[in-house]
Image (cartoon, rainbow, N blue to C red):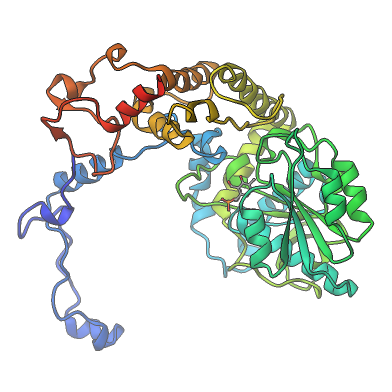
Length: 479
Ligand SMILES: Cc1ncc(COP(=O)(O)O)c(C=O)c1O
């Protein structure tokens, strides 16, 4: 049902709550607020009772398509495990009721957490130091590229470009361009990995960095990474690691050991915090010893038994955001890492890879999987066979969301049964025939079903006959 605005509800004079009569008159108020900023007419606020207000917001919340109510097939940030207990921990008063300008002595616990978290990420990645300032992955990339520039400027290297393999995440070329470097794309080979000959051809003394995603966006591990490191080293070219998808490597392999100089992580993708749809993020950047002097300030240092913010770093690139980073996301990630421990994190890595390969094996008879497996935490499937019947990959994705997924209500996406349902749904979308499909509630009641919220704000369409557009699409998929 389409909802009325809260302004369209209630009645004049209705109130959800009654505040005590003001003890301060307008005259007294103008002592504190300049008269030009005081209202002369009352604000046009909704006038509703408490229950009207509660129902309005609860009903709006129920329209949300979220991981709490459905399988949500968008992005690894949302599909991973986001323990609820971490929300409570991040909401503790010691974390939320502090001010960034408080003196260091009054936030020792928070500084200790940042210090401990840095040590944990150093151990997990094999890098030397981390900054928590970047607000998300793409911001981490920009910060990393600023570090690349600072490193080369300090050495007097004249560098103008960054090499970005075509299998990298879309934000990599964007960050390269925004940071003022020319972006040179290098193609992948038939296996979906960086083509080493093409890379060698693209590298010269003007290349500041090679920016890689490993596992890459095809879900494949770049198995020749050590050779890539050798090629880059010949030109004093730094190796940048997009570690947004570190899930697949957790506890198994470390970018620092592979020779990377800079890595950004997406705490909101790998270590808790629901992020899909625009939730908060955190993209800490880790660096090797040779890049560490350029990190943003402040860094947390441990001096004696105390923790302090250190601003005294002469080669720093400065601050890349206000204060110290998105603390709530760092706290959730810290809780996640502490709860799992080293062994638990290793299990996360293995489970991410096994789940993706399980799904891959179940779908490979239906969809085309262009690159040979095994994959890491994700894989790419192509709808090339379906295209011949007039159905695009976008049609299948939309059909999954609009038509099939409402059946997933109240199920998580984390166990094998879920993987089976995901595979089953994708296969069913392909072969469904309308007559096999049981009528949904709205059809039984004479109102045609459009599945979940539709483009028109999910208003029911009375009296329309025949399959709704996306259901018709599912029939088309049956060929
Ligand atoms: C491999 C990779 N790099 C970078 C990003 C960008 O991260 P963010 O969305 O936090 O800016 C993503 C996000 O999906 C990603 O998957």
